[in-house]
Image (tube, rainbow, N blue to C red; front, side, top):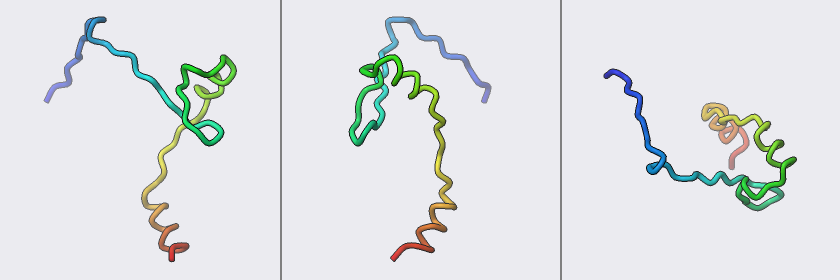
Length: 62
């Protein structure tokens, strides 16, 4: 199947609110001050390896 580029009109777009956990509770990033926004966007995001998680739970589980 060939990839197709989808075009959207401005009227079809909606704002997406990004939330993150800060100091034990969740807050929308749009409420952050300038410094905290900069810190948030410079974070490195990662995905945990399922294989490593399974090894850990087998080793340290009940």
